[in-house]
Image 1 (tube, one colour):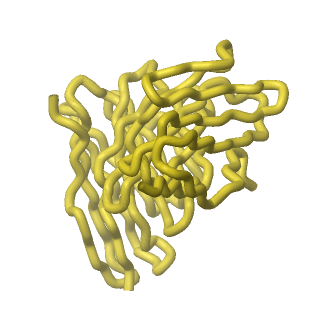
Image 2: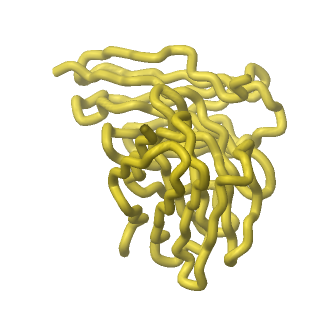
Length: 112
Length: 112
């Protein structure tokens, strides 16, 4: 059984640029959630996708957007990057009726 | 405003002893709680969970206790092992999309 994978592992971008982060969910999981974890904080919920549609969103501006594909993999897009977007971005997959989410290793984004 | 609070940023215990990690929550609507362990440069790993209809759940060395009237839960690790050294996060569900609200984490160090 393949776990959750994310790419890239690390990324450095300049303020104002755009970035796309990718996630492959665990086999059999059709729900994907994205979280942002700043240093010294717990993960903050960005949004969740279920069957290719957004299924809930946290307090993040519209420049954070996402996609889910028919194979349940997902992308997180961030436009007009700001310095405060520097964080670890975590993807988690789960079964639709389960509270238990399984996380990938994360993508460390640095905005300079 | 932290809805899930882990008031101890760090905890140090001797190998073989009990580790007790605490978590408080403010929202009485929360009805499912999870504990995750996180090593540096890895995503959070699910450890154990508990539903609000129970007051205890046990899985090997890990036991979670829930006191609904006090809005408090705790994770007990017995016996503690050096490999348990990690950051432990308490999380709770919020809403129908199963998004998780997280505490800030407690860094556990188990000394040989």
